[in-house]
Image (cartoon, rainbow, N blue to C red; front, side, top):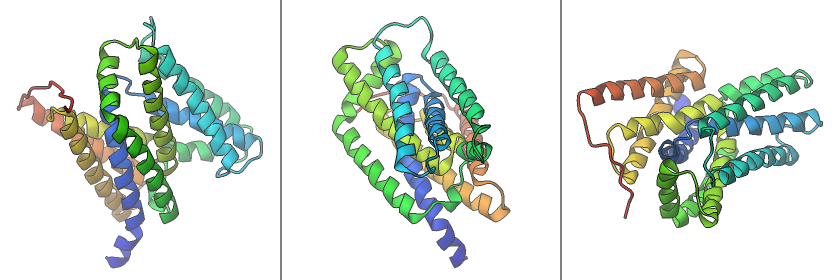
Length: 280
């Protein structure tokens, strides 16, 4: 038992980090009504990596990471500035097109790269069980830096999330704040996908926040419940996958997905006020 806990300590620490930061961003994403944006960002980042691999660079090299960030920042920057005007095409439609385009291009490039299909599979499913303490430390420091940014501008970001849901058009100053929010979100998603994979990151972003929104009313309570649900779900999924010798990503996704549906059923019999209150 002691050996098992020692082995699982690293993925558990990683899961706590991911659940915490994605639970926070998930509350914003649900409020903004752009549910699938993280999948699109992650897929575009994978496309940048595939291009780097095609050019002959190593997967973990700084050049490949730079290409991934460049691609995602171009997409997220364009998305942020396009939201300054009313659009005939819904945001979710644009996000879906970006995801499909990124995935299709990545699949085409995979045919030209040795082991390209294996990389795509790894990007989708991830493998949090084999994360190292070095990666956990690095990503923890990065997330701490992003946390400081959101601590300073948190009230502004919450206000923008509320506004974007009602009216996507923004003034230039607000657009710059919005861009800062999206850039930090982009960095978090790209780094999180390297550890957990696209499906797990998307589930941690949406499922705990959706479950929390069924009962909690204020921003702070929703974020807190999102963290708690995400942490419990990922830790339970890690133990389940290890004990049953099954894939860790799907195990966590199944647990969190079932939890949302169970809480939704409970919500049917306990109606509550769903007004969201921003902290004063």
